[in-house]
Image (cartoon, rainbow, N blue to C red):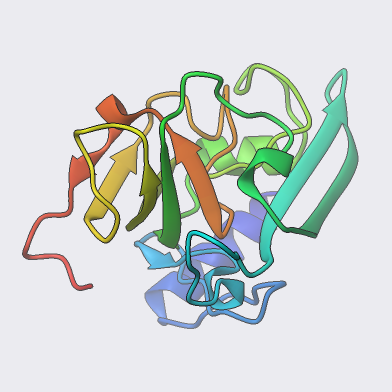
Length: 174
């Protein structure tokens, strides 16, 4: 584990991308191309292209399964928030300490398994049942239970509560 952390840090300093199971380049320690966002095609409200998500399953601190799975709808993800009203097409996510613990199957960080990690995300509103957000608006989300209690940003699509989202600051790139 320590060698992996040092390797990631060395790659980040050298600006070397980490491999991504979906083919995108993931940059450690900074906002990066969202996991599997390359698999998310332009969609309409009638028909959605399949998307991928990194799903982790563990029991009693022992990793059972860690894989990138394909889904046709966000409702198929393993740990959905019943109060979520906004679907975000994830463009960027990152890897932080809590995500690393979840990916290793360690308990104490997330409410339960299986789960899609990704505590932070940035993306575009795909659909909204809330008057707070309209499709096409760019948003960011940090924390607020995603990736720990509910499915997070290591997915092409993520369903979240409208109150948790913030407008993307204009200084951030699209």
